[in-house]
Length: 102
Image (cartoon, rainbow, N blue to C red):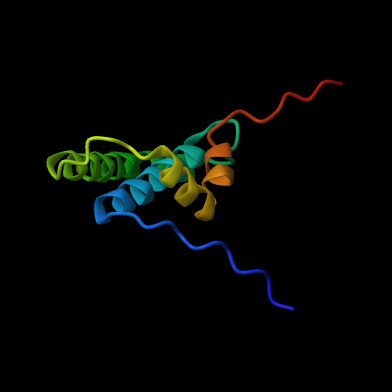
């Protein structure tokens, strides 16, 4: 039996789609850099080197939204898109793992 189909992405403008994609790419890189989750310096170094380019893409997406008159972030719609794209798990890699009490 195949896995269930994920819900469809909400309708987004191109700039909103670029914003969500760039945001998640930055989150993925920060997760790879996170010393509480990483396993080697080379992987963290590569992610840190890629971070400025992804931050620029994120800035550019927000600039495009602003220049087109998209002055508000529609949080509910963007949150739905982030959930469909597994944003909650991906963002969890940025946080510290739960403390283990022995």
